[in-house]
Length: 114
Length: 107
Image 1 (cartoon, each protein chain N blue to C red):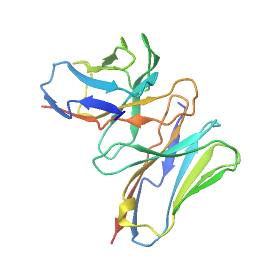
Image 2 (cartoon, helix red, strand yellow):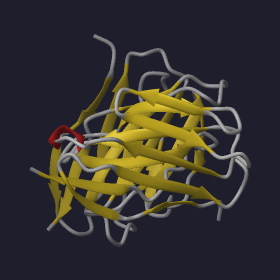
Image 3 (cartoon, rainbow over the protein chains, first blue to last red):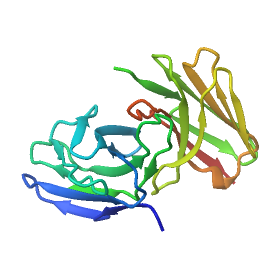
Image 4 (cartoon, helix red, strand yellow):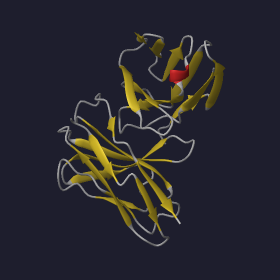
């Protein structure tokens, strides 16, 4: 089945540690996105990538980093510089270029900083 | 910034009552999408509106796009407990999401 796989589903980390969240898709989509969702809040865009080896900052990129070395993969690193990293992280993908394609989301990764 | 706001933030209704959420953009939108996120789940695409004044229906759900393409609404007729969740609108440029409306349906 085609879809988006995020891992891990739950993650705990200590303050000061970097952590990388995985996002893999087999939908052959060019564009991929990372969102952050806080309890009872909306979705805020962290980074997005419309093509391999290229990505742009979203509204809340500070303290995060990404890479897009392969079309299928768009990992997100939450660095120690992110002051309040506890949140629900959602990865999504879409067909690039149409500016009208729907977003397909993974099931999310819930990060808790202890 | 180019924000997309939604009202209300929360809505509690009795089962069978109607529900409406409104989405407003500070800029003209080329098109708008609506998503539903069930509690503990991830957003799922519902529909896309493209034309000025467009109205689309999906069973008990009615979606409208404003004439100026700056606002949109989602109306649910005779809510059911399966309608519980958060409804988001989204512009497709950078896929910026609205703040969402959380719907609770009381049986």
